[in-house]
Length: 250
Image 1 (cartoon, helix red, strand yellow):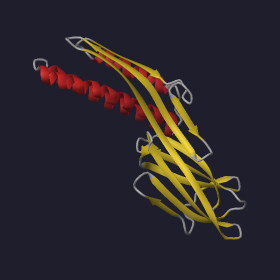
Image 2: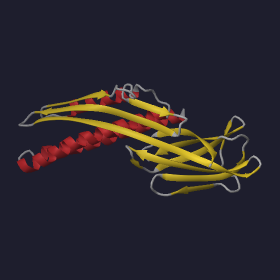
Image 3: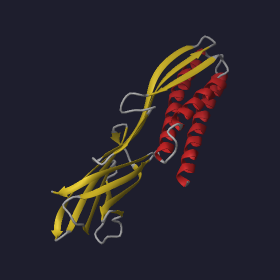
Image 4: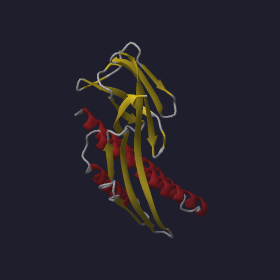
């Protein structure tokens, strides 16, 4: 329940930021009506901030969905964003159409795959077509917004003695394919059919390299020749992603 409410707050926050950005640009644009060069510069800023606002809406929607919200919230929020722009611009016509990506692996703009092969993906992608007309202004712009958080997990273990194993696990966080910091990351391991937290084990270690790479190590008595681990992560945009991996002796 708390997660859903938090997701709704994220969406409202993103929409509020987008509204403030656009409202400020419109106000400045009004003040510059008699100065052509300045007006042109502010028009460019206005258009760029519409793109920025679109990204905020996509990020907040994806965060909400990965926290357990409805998949429909992406298209609903994009419609609200377009409606806001149409009603806010008063110098002519402002139209923003969005088309969530529907080509595999995306469905209705979403690609969420928290797999067991060491790679987890939470992604939203949409095409935008923007048209601004009025007062000697005619802008046509097509752009794509892709918001993707990826989590890569790999690891191995060495035998300490008997069934006791020393595990070393590496996790990497990416935003749009580039290294990114985690807001929070947790590692669990599977033992006796239950997920367990290694925090509290005598030799548990967690290292943050400051570049989106995280290292975990610990020793534990775990039967079998395969140890399954699961990393759960929120990035700095509060988008959630998780991934599982199998650790073998190496």
